[in-house]
Amino acid sequence: MTTMLIMGAAIVLLCIASSKLLYRFGVPTLLVFLLLGMLFGSDGPGGIAFENYELAQQICSIGLIFIMFYGGFGTNWKAARPVAAPAILMSTVGVVLTAALTGFFCVFILKTTVLEGLLTGAVLASTDAASVFAVLRSRKLNLKGGLASLLEVESGSNDPIAYMLTIVLLSLMEGEGGFVSMAITLVRQIGFGLLFGTVLALSAAFVLRRINLEIDGLYSIFTMAVAVMGYALCEWTGGNGYLSVYIIGIVLGNSRILHKRSLVHFFDGISWLMQIMLFFTLGLLSFPSHFHNVAPPGIAIALFMTVIARPAATFAILSWFRIPVRQQLLVSWVGLRGAASIVFAIYAVTAGGLLENDIFHIVFMVALFSVAVQGSLIPLVAKKLDLVEAEESVLKTFTDYEDESMSQLMELTADDRQEWVGKSIMEAGIPEEILVIMIRRGDEVIVPKGSTVIEKGDVLVLSAQNFDFLAR
Image 1: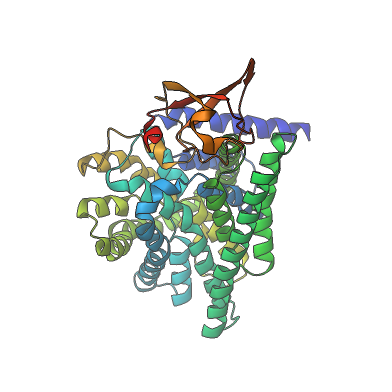
Image 2 (image 1 turned 90 degrees about the vertical axis):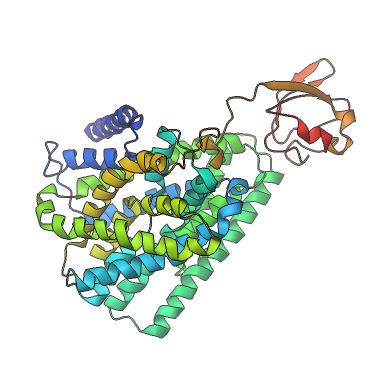
């Protein structure tokens, strides 16, 4: 037990140190953690023998719950709203188109069966949000035309659709029904996912606004339990657990709730821990000695998706919104395949279907190629297309955005804003960009919380970039 703890802690520290070293160069964290897992695996100097696909699936499923929850929780809907329609179409219709084109490529060029080819396309259809935004954050690379927000919403929400397609195709391969059964499965996946996600998110937001827990740390535990409950209940009833978790995240992340800033930082840390665990496990499960067999089909699929499938799906959707060609080209390029695709490949391996190809290592090769080549070239491609926004920070596309330039301070007496009196800070309708950093109440100085009630005569010390809201 002690040896395992020492080894686990050492691996986490090594992952953190490696990511810190390579982060500034824009190397996606996925690639770092995968490579470390491969080094510690059976074919690497670490020599850890790990071939348990069932255990890997369970570990990765837990990791994806928190990664996808934080993907929704960290989405700034205010910034994303203008591009919500094209982003959602990209994460739904775009995923289906990409899966279909890639599937038929596998059938006609790689000579797979129809169902196995479509399964491969479905597994690879979603894009990896963690890798995309690791590159954008590390290079402080904001994009013109709201593309950062578009990519954030698309990459954060397309995993549930790819998962749903994977489950449907696995059911067909196992002979569990035809068109009617597939339609029922799709309706159940989407319906229960939306239902459980919405109901639990609204209920949790109501509780977090109305109940003041005595221990601040319990807010994080409560929210974490809601996310896990959303996934488990949805999966138990045959719904799409990942869709449910994403809905819970995006609703809670854009609601006025207590201790929101601390929740953001808590789940940011949890999400990173899950990424380390998930990516390292996937690297550990792989066998680099198999790569020479899967390299030709893997690289062929990766090139096809990069040059044909992803651009075709992107232009078929974004052209309707009259988005400039240069922006569509960049969206086409920023279609990185990552951890979710490899996890869905594990689902395919453990499902018991008759697979003629080593789909796990093929998908692993596609993901490696994608993050290593496409991911590393994102800054260069963005600059060549003149789509880098130098005046704005990319962090504004996240709800964890904290403006370093919030240096303006002012005092405001509650008498001047009568509608605030008698309400908590959270309920007073104070714009989110305005921070109440201190309250003076007579001789008493109060450090405000979201639940702090503003009383008549209170002097509020406010911080913001500007105070135009006072003129409204």
